[in-house]
Length: 429
Ligand SMILES: *Cc1c(COP(=O)(O)O)cnc(C)c1O
Ligand SMILES: [Zn+2]
Image 1 (cartoon, rainbow, N blue to C red):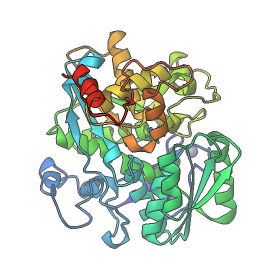
Image 2: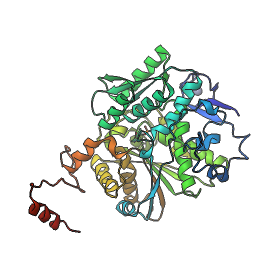
Image 3: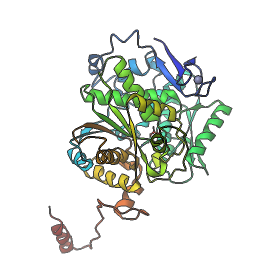
Image 4: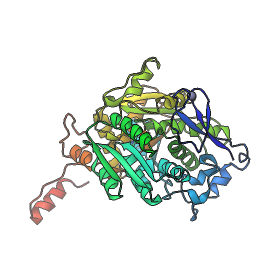
């Protein structure tokens, strides 16, 4: 079954064995293109449903369950997997009513092996690195990409090299990169500069680049849509809401949804809503401006996973918005952290960036773009333990410029039975 790389701008094709991230001819981004011709007759809900609960690799993975759509020609023995995916889809009425809608599903990608959706892209990216015979892989990261890459590189016996900024990396993420044995470079530059640096260094040293500019990453990440639709019994929601940083995920969603339509798994496309933080909103500005003149921004937000001012997948995200009649919304750090407290408070939890899905959906309902009766599927991108400082800071009311609306303050009580009983009495339900 044939797969190839294809430029999204000039349609120039390249063999998938080429180590190439942008088009030689025009500099455009590349897609991995699959010819579903041979297998499209077997691609069906029944094929994928039949693999649910599989114990045996690769179909036990929520990415490779959809192998015919993800990487049809791959040899199973090349696959580097941690049984990623298989994440829960929660229907959460209390969060729905907070956001002002009747039906809200949240797909929790923080339930992946390293705690973020990045694992879905890393299984395909590191598999491709193995196919290409790579010994070293690298990425620049706000944290989760490096945590995931470090894990998968270790599994594959490769050296993982991560470029981190020297401030504002969430503790959980930093700990993972170090723990999984990656070579960690802390560099005095923001994410966008680190992204430039890692591209230059990778090219110079022949290291395989695993940021989401690598189109194999997106092939894995699009399985979030496959799995969510499978969980919804292939009935299409009205909206998919997702945070946007480097815009790899939203780009992957657009591609995956279109492919599902092409092979007949779904009969219409949902609308995509990409949510950015106000302080890191280059796509939002560009959207509002009718995609005329793009300007990068200096990113600043508490949601460090999306603190990105110059997203590499911009053109693919614009394409996904066009395919799906999508919209872009922005939310403040206050709205992000308040929405996070609601998601956390129902016992599910997520990291700050993930809460954009709920905060953004709420804004879109307020603005009349999402209707109360619409079916909405939001994606929670990362685990609640990734950024403990943000969570504790919120509930301790110690985040500069923010005031917690949904605070769960710690109670200080003396070593005294009566005092403890009194405190709990005051707070009886
Ligand atoms: C990477 C990441 C994002 C941003 O995704 P992009 O594909 O870069 O737009 C959002 N949330 C979390 C938790 C992430 O790790
Ligand atoms: Zn091109």
